[in-house]
Length: 324
Image (cartoon, rainbow, N blue to C red; front, side, top):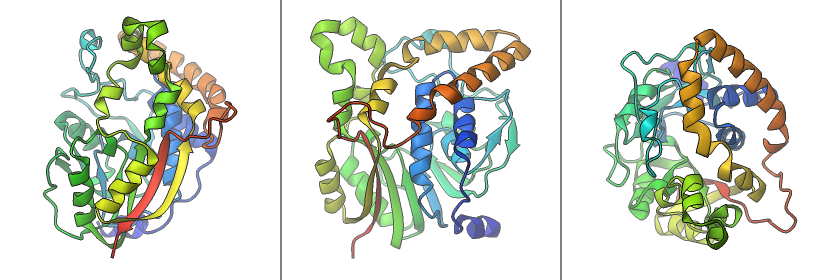
């Protein structure tokens, strides 16, 4: 634990853009539109000094935080290696990642540069996956619609990239304030309601419900507290949080690409890749990752926007601290 605290207080050394891009694309290769979004998120988070004690709220399977902290996987591992029955993937709210095999053990090529003291998530299968990465000192299954079983004023760094998934958002924000030490940093990555401008959802009349349901797969419905920037900032104020910094890092161009990506055919791709011989899978994956490292290079820039006049961001990084 002591070494974790020392390392966590030191800003991470800069990572070569191609190296980071490759590590994220390698892990999320069959959903490259998610991979570049993770790179943008990691680049924004890299500006934060990660101090201990620290907590990652709604950490999921931990892969994002593992890669952000400099961890590396062997080529045979990715997030698609252990998924649920893909026959259920057609259900609107199906989460194929809410599953863990009994023998789940990621092939780790390099350990992260630091550890995070605590991670939380309400899905026990994802907690079990995160436990195998060595990036969390402790993991707590928890639904953030309820108060956290954690002491007051404990954490110097609180991170969450899933606040807009929480139904009882105002209670959640107040609870975040409660567990944060005076002067501590709360880092929230929040999507903005403006993302709907850059999806096909507002073309329902032309495209029809069936087409949009195939593309959307329940995404917007799973974000119950999505809102605009001014509403987020009012929520922070009401929860007793002071805004230290606010930085947009995802543009409408990113959202347009992400809106469809490979989402509709991803279950078929995953089923095919997981059914072939491991040697052939590694060969295809290697060439695929090489290609997408080049294709996604221009899009791994937080200020890239190809649409004139579309200056509304779709995801923000807020650095907050408990108000005095």
